[in-house]
Length: 413
Image (cartoon, rainbow, N blue to C red; front, side):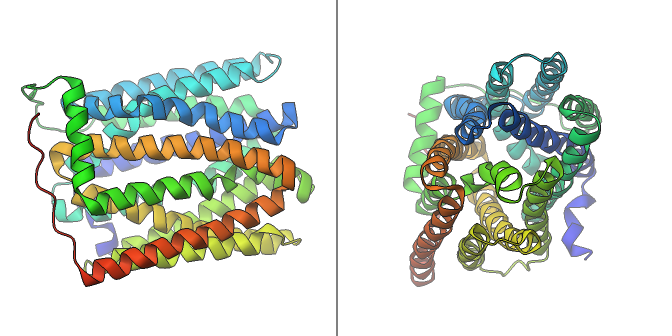
């Protein structure tokens, strides 16, 4: 257990972890409330996909620029600015819902604004984790702990959101999210980081972007990680956008029912993250990724047509365990194998692929659910996860037969 929390030996990481924990709790309350308000006002499965699309598509458009900014400037200052802007967005969203604007136009627009902010926030935040850990051997543990924090917030946030929506109204969820940013901004201001020294810029932005693409092209392992994560985001992961339909139409429930479904996803993810922190250094991460891709697929297949709510929650926990273990380990491999100077750009390319595939997949899943039914759609997503798992099996065999060699450092254009 002591080894499972070894990254906490670094003061900066402890502060960062504490602030992010409260902020992410508010973030997931807001995400849950947005989905519920959109579906309650429109009764449209397709509009659920649109709400996800509005948040993620702007991230895809600006993510590469966000990666270059993360590598060219102080990641700490970029992150501090994005957190302040995210707080402003949460306040505006709370006011829009409180004033009862007709339709969901204001929610969609503000979701798109958040997507633009996230395009700069994610590369800076994920890259900064490496700098906050004193002993670089603890970086994989820090990534796993970050995943634990994320998934605990997924567990608690939706459940709290369901209660808050029923007792206080959806605008309270948005207001609490805005308040949570006080914690993360305070923790960032308390960090003790070395004085930032600007690097000489010998290339324009487009040249640095080209270096990032060449680096990924020449590193087969990173190329495979980004490609398969994109397939999962396009074909499988959008099942989460259909949870309001399961809550309201299939299980004839309320906002609390929706919160429990999202909470089951968070519970499975949290369990996976705790499991990952306990993995010894000698573990073959590619094997764990392969197994958990199949766990995700089986979980969705069992969940799709289960008529009993309690059993459906259990199957959802299983599927979420596989989903989060698979995703987290892929990101861990990215963090620990990429060259430090390329970290922001590689992460931004991952964000580009992920945030392009997920909203497009959400639109497809929303349309498929409207045409073929939500249960049939989730069943198909489980089957597709099994097919992606076969790609991991092939990659695992190739990796064991021919261990990858590191790619050379990119040369300036």
